[in-house]
Amino acid sequence: MLSKSDYLINIAATCVGTRALGPGLRSVVWVQGCPFRCSGCLSPQWIPIRNARLVPIDILVEELLINPLVDGLTLSGGEPFLQAAALSELVRQARKQRELSLICFTGYQLADLRNMTAVKGVEDLLSMIDVLIDGPYIAELDDNRGMRGSSNQVIHHLTDRLKDYNFETQPRQAEIRISDGDMLFVGVPPQGIIPQVDQEVRLNSSRMKVLYEWT
Ligand code: SF4
Image (cartoon, rainbow, N blue to C red; front, side, top):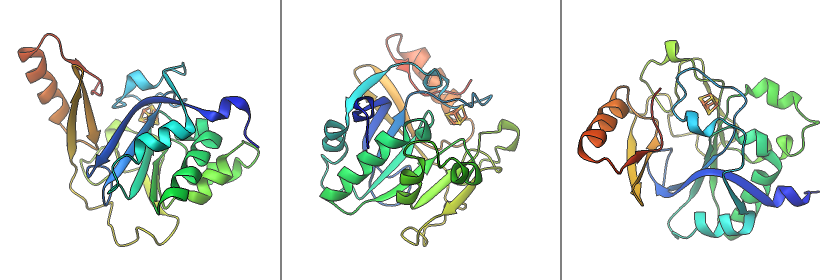
């Protein structure tokens, strides 16, 4: 059963309708807070475990599905499994409205998650995921290939739903979303792109804030 706090999800950012983070048209949730603190993390501002945007689950479902063509969700972060109970409820509610595939990036390894049965929501969320991309980001193993940050990360097809999509060989891509003077990179960006864009932005706009950057 969910506790009261599980009805809120602590969100770093969202994106509705992207083709940069998996097959089809996807909505993405990046959660706030991660215990791994990988060196070179693409989103270090999303590592601190603090309240960011606290959103009721039903409101977030409406937001993510506002585009009727969205046919998949991607969870990333931050660390999704820190909010496993709330996220599994989010996916359950969203799937009541339409059929959706689910991709999840996590710093945990699948074997660890399978042993975390005592942690609320972990087993439930795991049972809903079609593709899990697991393991921490290791900058030295970033080979600029596929839809994962470094070669230690494993792409697990936990169901057959997305089995025809080869995550390992997909060219890396990133979309840039700009809203209210903030810039958000969506995707697994090819090496070198973020500093290049960051430099252009800093040269051309003193008002633009980069939300998602290399360190
Ligand atoms: S697991 Fe992901 S979000 Fe967490 S620190 Fe590592 S790269 Fe960043």
